[in-house]
Image (cartoon, rainbow, N blue to C red; front, side, top):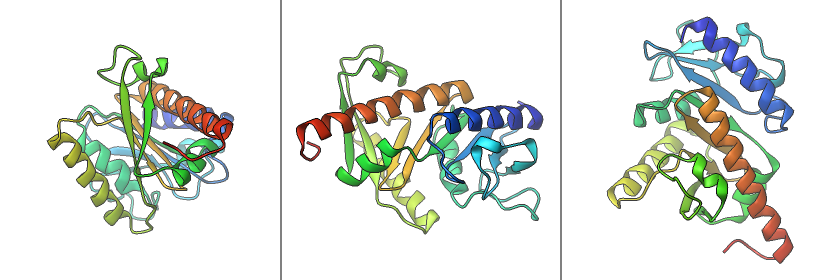
Amino acid sequence: MTEQEAAEAIVAAGNRLDRLGWVPATAGNISLRLADGRIAITRSGSHKGFLDAGQVMIVDLDGTAEDAALRPSAETLLHCGAYRRFPDAGAVLHGHSPANTVLSRLSGDVVLLEGYELLKAFPGLPTHEATVEVPVFENDQDIPRLQGRVEARWQEMAADGLPIPPGYLIRGHGIYVWGPDMPGALARMEALEFMLACELAALQARGGSPA
Protein backbone atom coordinates (compact mmCIF):
# COMPACT_ATOMS: atom_id res chain seq x y z
CA MET A 1 0.00 0.00 0.00
CA THR A 2 1.35 3.42 -0.98
CA GLU A 3 1.23 6.50 1.24
CA GLN A 4 -1.55 7.97 -0.90
CA GLU A 5 -3.60 4.79 -0.79
CA ALA A 6 -3.11 4.57 2.96
CA ALA A 7 -4.23 8.17 3.43
CA GLU A 8 -7.35 7.54 1.35
CA ALA A 9 -8.18 4.41 3.34
CA ILE A 10 -7.67 6.24 6.66
CA VAL A 11 -9.90 9.14 5.55
CA ALA A 12 -12.64 6.69 4.53
CA ALA A 13 -12.34 4.81 7.83
CA GLY A 14 -12.56 8.07 9.76
CA ASN A 15 -15.78 8.94 7.94
CA ARG A 16 -17.19 5.50 8.76
CA LEU A 17 -16.32 5.67 12.47
CA ASP A 18 -17.66 9.21 12.70
CA ARG A 19 -21.01 8.18 11.20
CA LEU A 20 -21.24 5.44 13.83
CA GLY A 21 -20.58 7.94 16.61
CA TRP A 22 -17.41 6.22 17.82
CA VAL A 23 -14.91 9.09 17.39
CA PRO A 24 -16.52 12.23 18.89
CA ALA A 25 -14.73 15.58 18.73
CA THR A 26 -11.02 14.83 18.13
CA ALA A 27 -11.15 11.42 19.83
CA GLY A 28 -9.70 8.26 18.34
CA ASN A 29 -6.90 7.52 15.92
CA ILE A 30 -6.42 5.36 12.84
CA SER A 31 -3.33 3.79 11.27
CA LEU A 32 -2.19 1.51 8.46
CA ARG A 33 1.06 -0.38 7.95
CA LEU A 34 2.74 0.45 4.63
CA ALA A 35 4.39 -2.16 2.44
CA ASP A 36 7.86 -1.10 3.65
CA GLY A 37 6.89 -1.40 7.34
CA ARG A 38 6.38 2.29 8.08
CA ILE A 39 3.11 3.41 9.65
CA ALA A 40 0.62 5.93 8.25
CA ILE A 41 -1.35 7.44 11.16
CA THR A 42 -3.69 10.33 11.89
CA ARG A 43 -2.11 13.51 13.22
CA SER A 44 -2.86 14.75 16.72
CA GLY A 45 -5.97 16.89 17.16
CA SER A 46 -7.72 15.93 13.93
CA HIS A 47 -11.47 15.26 13.82
CA LYS A 48 -11.82 11.84 12.24
CA GLY A 49 -15.04 12.74 10.45
CA PHE A 50 -13.36 15.61 8.57
CA LEU A 51 -10.01 14.11 7.65
CA ASP A 52 -8.05 14.80 4.50
CA ALA A 53 -4.72 13.44 3.29
CA GLY A 54 -2.87 16.31 4.98
CA GLN A 55 -3.97 15.04 8.38
CA VAL A 56 -2.21 11.71 7.88
CA MET A 57 1.50 11.42 8.64
CA ILE A 58 4.21 8.75 8.60
CA VAL A 59 6.05 7.29 11.59
CA ASP A 60 8.45 4.38 11.99
CA LEU A 61 7.75 1.29 14.07
CA ASP A 62 9.08 3.11 17.16
CA GLY A 63 6.64 5.99 16.64
CA THR A 64 9.22 8.52 15.44
CA ALA A 65 7.75 11.00 12.95
CA GLU A 66 9.31 11.08 9.50
CA ASP A 67 8.61 14.83 9.39
CA ALA A 68 9.68 16.28 12.74
CA ALA A 69 7.41 19.29 12.19
CA LEU A 70 4.30 17.08 12.44
CA ARG A 71 2.88 15.73 15.70
CA PRO A 72 1.35 12.24 15.71
CA SER A 73 -1.34 11.10 18.10
CA ALA A 74 -0.20 10.84 21.71
CA GLU A 75 -1.15 7.15 21.57
CA THR A 76 0.94 6.28 18.52
CA LEU A 77 3.04 3.90 20.62
CA LEU A 78 -0.05 1.74 21.27
CA HIS A 79 -0.47 1.35 17.52
CA CYS A 80 3.21 0.53 17.12
CA GLY A 81 2.98 -2.02 19.93
CA ALA A 82 0.26 -3.93 18.09
CA TYR A 83 2.23 -3.86 14.84
CA ARG A 84 5.38 -5.12 16.55
CA ARG A 85 3.60 -7.91 18.42
CA PHE A 86 1.40 -9.10 15.53
CA PRO A 87 3.23 -9.29 12.19
CA ASP A 88 -0.05 -9.88 10.34
CA ALA A 89 -1.62 -6.67 11.70
CA GLY A 90 -2.09 -4.22 8.84
CA ALA A 91 -4.44 -1.66 10.40
CA VAL A 92 -5.21 -0.42 13.92
CA LEU A 93 -8.31 1.50 15.02
CA HIS A 94 -8.97 3.37 18.26
CA GLY A 95 -12.42 4.71 19.17
CA HIS A 96 -14.52 6.00 22.05
CA SER A 97 -18.06 4.63 21.82
CA PRO A 98 -20.51 5.06 24.72
CA ALA A 99 -20.74 1.26 25.06
CA ASN A 100 -17.01 0.57 25.37
CA THR A 101 -16.47 3.61 27.60
CA VAL A 102 -19.25 2.75 30.07
CA LEU A 103 -18.74 -1.02 30.07
CA SER A 104 -15.00 -0.68 30.68
CA ARG A 105 -15.75 1.48 33.72
CA LEU A 106 -18.06 -1.18 35.16
CA SER A 107 -15.94 -4.26 34.42
CA GLY A 108 -12.99 -5.93 36.10
CA ASP A 109 -9.80 -6.71 34.19
CA VAL A 110 -11.67 -8.51 31.38
CA VAL A 111 -14.96 -8.35 29.53
CA LEU A 112 -16.20 -11.88 28.89
CA LEU A 113 -17.96 -12.51 25.56
CA GLU A 114 -19.74 -15.83 25.09
CA GLY A 115 -22.09 -17.34 22.52
CA TYR A 116 -22.29 -14.37 20.16
CA GLU A 117 -22.57 -15.13 16.44
CA LEU A 118 -20.22 -12.22 15.76
CA LEU A 119 -17.40 -13.92 17.64
CA LYS A 120 -16.75 -15.52 14.26
CA ALA A 121 -15.29 -12.16 13.19
CA PHE A 122 -12.29 -12.97 15.37
CA PRO A 123 -9.43 -15.11 14.00
CA GLY A 124 -9.54 -18.82 14.78
CA LEU A 125 -13.19 -18.80 15.90
CA PRO A 126 -15.28 -20.52 13.19
CA THR A 127 -18.30 -20.87 15.49
CA HIS A 128 -20.24 -18.84 18.03
CA GLU A 129 -19.63 -21.57 20.59
CA ALA A 130 -16.61 -19.82 22.07
CA THR A 131 -15.57 -17.63 24.97
CA VAL A 132 -13.32 -14.62 24.52
CA GLU A 133 -11.77 -12.57 27.30
CA VAL A 134 -11.22 -8.99 26.14
CA PRO A 135 -8.58 -7.37 28.40
CA VAL A 136 -9.34 -4.13 30.22
CA PHE A 137 -6.40 -1.90 31.19
CA GLU A 138 -6.37 1.02 33.59
CA ASN A 139 -6.12 4.35 31.83
CA ASP A 140 -2.69 5.95 32.00
CA GLN A 141 -1.35 9.16 30.47
CA ASP A 142 2.11 7.59 30.45
CA ILE A 143 1.72 5.79 27.12
CA PRO A 144 5.01 3.82 27.21
CA ARG A 145 4.05 2.50 30.66
CA LEU A 146 0.57 1.60 29.42
CA GLN A 147 2.01 -0.19 26.39
CA GLY A 148 4.32 -2.08 28.74
CA ARG A 149 1.31 -3.37 30.67
CA VAL A 150 -0.46 -4.33 27.46
CA GLU A 151 2.60 -6.24 26.23
CA ALA A 152 2.98 -7.98 29.60
CA ARG A 153 -0.65 -9.18 29.44
CA TRP A 154 -0.14 -10.48 25.92
CA GLN A 155 2.91 -12.41 27.07
CA GLU A 156 0.98 -13.88 30.01
CA MET A 157 -1.89 -14.96 27.78
CA ALA A 158 0.48 -16.56 25.29
CA ALA A 159 2.36 -18.36 28.09
CA ASP A 160 -0.95 -19.72 29.42
CA GLY A 161 -1.97 -20.93 25.97
CA LEU A 162 -4.84 -18.43 25.78
CA PRO A 163 -5.84 -16.85 22.47
CA ILE A 164 -5.07 -13.15 22.28
CA PRO A 165 -8.14 -11.33 20.95
CA PRO A 166 -7.48 -8.64 18.33
CA GLY A 167 -8.48 -5.86 20.67
CA TYR A 168 -8.57 -4.48 24.21
CA LEU A 169 -10.25 -1.79 26.29
CA ILE A 170 -8.78 1.07 28.29
CA ARG A 171 -10.97 1.81 31.29
CA GLY A 172 -13.21 4.82 30.79
CA HIS A 173 -11.26 5.70 27.67
CA GLY A 174 -11.86 3.56 24.60
CA ILE A 175 -11.06 0.54 22.49
CA TYR A 176 -8.16 -0.68 20.34
CA VAL A 177 -8.76 -3.17 17.53
CA TRP A 178 -6.51 -4.40 14.71
CA GLY A 179 -6.85 -6.51 11.59
CA PRO A 180 -4.91 -7.67 8.52
CA ASP A 181 -6.09 -4.63 6.55
CA MET A 182 -8.49 -1.73 6.96
CA PRO A 183 -11.65 -3.66 5.95
CA GLY A 184 -10.69 -6.44 8.34
CA ALA A 185 -10.00 -4.05 11.22
CA LEU A 186 -13.29 -2.24 10.63
CA ALA A 187 -15.21 -5.53 10.58
CA ARG A 188 -13.63 -6.63 13.85
CA MET A 189 -14.29 -3.28 15.48
CA GLU A 190 -17.94 -3.30 14.40
CA ALA A 191 -18.35 -6.88 15.65
CA LEU A 192 -16.72 -6.10 18.99
CA GLU A 193 -18.67 -2.88 19.44
CA PHE A 194 -21.94 -4.73 18.74
CA MET A 195 -21.15 -7.36 21.36
CA LEU A 196 -20.12 -4.72 23.90
CA ALA A 197 -23.38 -2.85 23.28
CA CYS A 198 -25.28 -6.10 23.86
CA GLU A 199 -23.37 -6.72 27.09
CA LEU A 200 -24.16 -3.21 28.30
CA ALA A 201 -27.85 -3.59 27.41
CA ALA A 202 -27.99 -6.93 29.27
CA LEU A 203 -26.31 -5.35 32.27
CA GLN A 204 -28.82 -2.52 32.31
CA ALA A 205 -31.70 -5.00 32.02
CA ARG A 206 -30.36 -6.91 35.04
CA GLY A 207 -29.78 -3.71 36.96
CA GLY A 208 -26.50 -5.06 38.29
CA SER A 209 -22.79 -5.30 37.68
CA PRO A 210 -20.90 -7.41 35.15
CA ALA A 211 -20.38 -11.04 36.11
